[in-house]
Image (cartoon, rainbow, N blue to C red; front, side, top):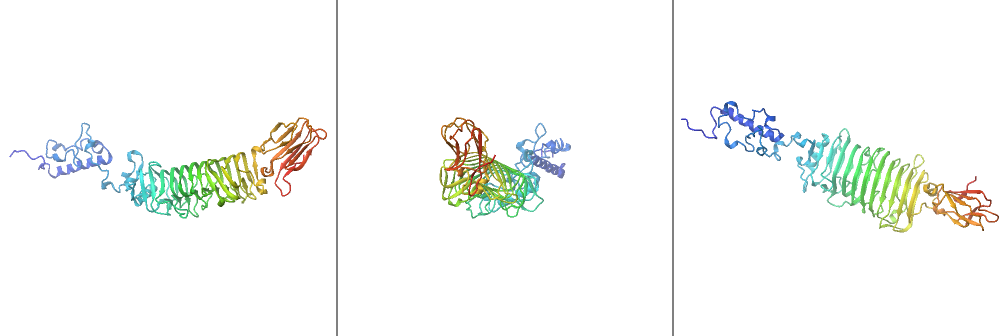
Length: 558
């Protein structure tokens, strides 16, 4: 008869076509959820509505399917689907494997590790998921974002030899990579084959191991290089546990043309910060910004690098208590260093004959400031000696170090400590100025040391005021030209600086201008040994130091 049909019945007039149209509308709703597009942008203005012939039929879309998730959405006054009716697809399996859905979230071009199954819950093994994530971002030159939390690994993560990728954490206090395995790296740069590793970034991550790694675990390096890499950036990274923070594998080209800044290492690191001793290339054009470390348990050398045309801004050694060398430059390196600072340290007999800063054969360094001093700078090396700087010989005539200013103090010293210890053929060490406590400039037992070291501020060329009618004892740093203008009333003595404090190139000129008269002459001595006399007024005498086996202070003929 003409009775009403059920709201959920299928109209014979619409038939299968109506069912198909409902299916299309459901797909439209899902597409809107996937793409955040409006109904109008996904379809035409009428495509999300009922077909003209069915608009008046209640049987076209069952009431139970209208305006619900995974049903057929209704439209608002702007012909768009209200957000509340869109289904939540954040965890649906339907998008798994659709790489485009993992890229460019909110227009950022970023890929998120959580989309690859990284949990960062600190207990789940995230190794497989993180490896898949890293492989994807490296292979597709994407920006990868790690979540806050602890990402637990059970083996190393291999980075393919690919360019143009970035890996960013949520902050070095937020994103933690925890290696549960002992004596294995965390990140291996260039571990798998490809064209090249360059133009990449690793930023805002904290690296650590579940266990403290003893110095015998030499593979426990958070970041290793298995392939020469260049144009990289390492920024705001923290290393809590491990051997060396960065290590170049044997017979691999070292990273070059890269930037390293905001690097921090904690007291549970047992090797150091950088170990490039095994790399084989020239390693040019690196720039190191600020590096901070607590080297209380580092055996060192803490910063062992090589390269040319590269710069270091600041390395701050908060504490070094295992007798570690601070900085070692491999042969033929060329570096500009702004500041090195050692706040606290302990050096015992094991450091005998070593230097805090060592330049190997034919290496060159220009150092701005070296500061050493705190409330706990202890040297306990009775009967032994150590050095601040050592410049060793090599091809091309040896290396060279120039330091603008050295400010160094021990709080206690047992043994001998010297600022300079250049090698036999080294071009030497030049220091602009010094402020020292319990340090000697040179080792007077070594002719090489004294002949290859200069304190430039002591070679000042200044003219003194009148020294008067009195004996004078000179110290390194006094005016180089000593004037005597007051008539002498008795013979007077000028005593030169001790042999142990002097160095090759240090000179003094003694001038009598109105002083010498009759038997009242000027005698110049080295210790108790007379060297020469000035017996005629209005004359001068020039005396210089060179280290020999017989005579050290010598009169330089006019």
